[in-house]
Length: 260
Length: 275
Image (cartoon, rainbow over all chains, first blue to last red; front, side):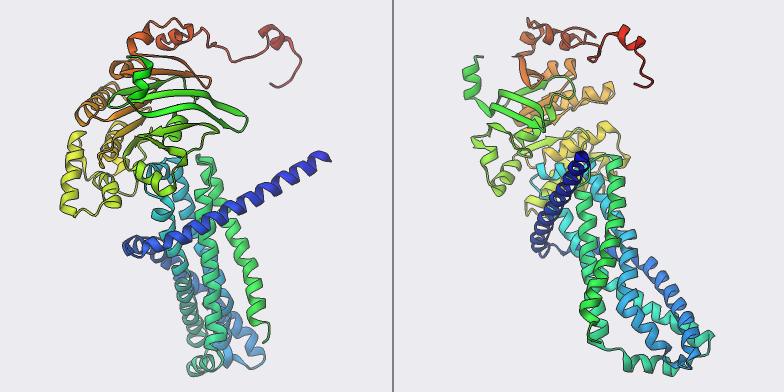
């Protein structure tokens, strides 16, 4: 019994210590962002590897999610004779929820794990230590550009996901199932609100991008510098990111759409 | 040379240094001097904290007691910017080379120049080619780190370490895992850089013959203490049994061949199923 309490106490303390380290790391990263201003090249390189290289997986997933939404939506709505509102259903689900959430989950799997592994291996091969000894702050040089790239890329990727998803819904709904093309778009246009739906979705994906990139970079930076340590850190990145994304999504949804 | 004059002429001095990791005491009241323009070696078996000592000198770790001064600056009392300014004058060669794997050889050597100076690219090019020429790898400038052999990677790291013309350079196990030719090249390079650039050199190593061949002064460290010091000649004729065992590489001596264990007979006849 005593042992159980001791273990519990130890892991709680370790958890809080890690949270503290993580917060300190985040503060250092945020101050480092100022240093990117005179060197935009650092950011652009990372935007390419974090953002551009994620475009394919995001586009393909968006297309299929949109097609499934079109199919499922049509079957349910046609029971009520409301298949003309398919466009609203597809767009609202994508812009409010699926776009930000699914693209963030994919982002965590594709870019987050890559960031953790990259930073973890840089630590294991003494590259970060080497930089410090060359009087170059690895947080400013390595971490901050990656962090900013992640935070900027995430909303853009979510927007891409939603846009392609809406096209996917249209292909299935209008192309295959015979929903009227005009009403698909016009109903969407009249019911989807720029601020309530789109901006809220963008805020969500911004928050997810912030948290996911933070987790990925911190796990890499804080890893035990061995191959096992890096592999565990990579797993933790994906798992913790998924939990944070889904948990935060609930909180944000409750805050944003509570009054509707 | 007497201990007093050595300490007067020292660039780095370590005073009453203690450092521990958890309950593990790595250094216990250690004092050392590293003379300007000389090659000083720290030798000792693996796991005695030799690399830790280099990290303490570079200010990457904090000692629990004692002080380290580098060129008159107490390393652990400096503010971050001052510490970084000091580090610009210190080169360090890591055991693995620590080259940045996403850049080729040329960009790796240019890295500190681009980070710390505002020199035009044409000037950086000349400097990089000169440094690469010094280590004999000017022709390998387009290779990526994963295309280099271990010895070449260390030479590139060496070119990078001297890119900013530092006042001192620290080598962490430069000879480990090198073939005889690479070892010979590194020994030659370390000595010639020390002489031609007037670099103060600190080598951490357990390769006895290579290190003794070029060092001006040697500290032998074990169990968190300095157990022998002197010129290579003095160390070779040291009265300490321990130092003798280390220098000659004998299997048994003050450092036992066997890890501490209970009697063999008891162990074999005990009834435990495992372990």
